Length: 218
Image 1: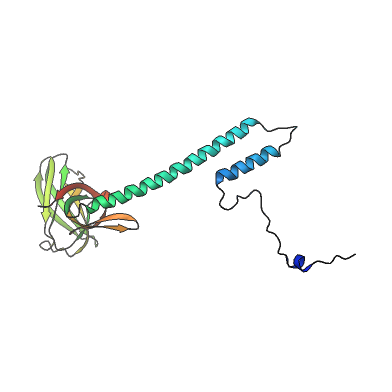
Image 2: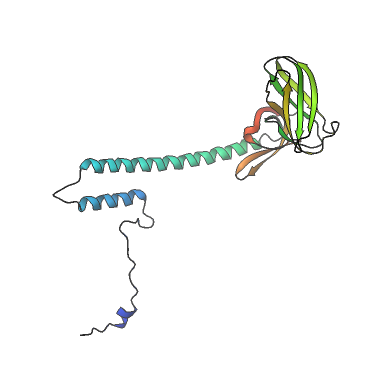
């Protein structure tokens, strides 16, 4: 016995199958979890009911997950707000003199000034300027007491070509002193979403490299 199909039945497209274990598009994790929980309760064996404490634990876990997501969203929003405020604040300091730590600088034609601090007196103190080619230029600073030691040099007079250099302090006591270099903020730029400070005669630096804000030059 054959059954004839109507044209409508022949042309009908197959209905998509829905996996009850997959969340519906646009449905939140919390709603999907509750749907599964209700289905689990309805379909449990009445002769062997599930332990109610399991459902309570699952609800507690769901609540913790939702709270964690909310906290993460708030942290991201606060981080973006702090980032924006940082850029705006730095923009107000264009023209200010700052101290940059680390000793890595880009020399141009301008004279360089800075300082470092000694925790013990030294009879022989030198500022070592090392280029990208590892050539060392040693600036003898003589004997220095405990405290801040200022220095300055003119790249032209030392025969230093424009380029990348590192500054380091050498003493006869082998003390390691952090070098700070002074410069004026020219502009604040964004590099890969992070604020970078362009300092005249020194190059571009991340905000974390600024150790002191000395104010606008008079």
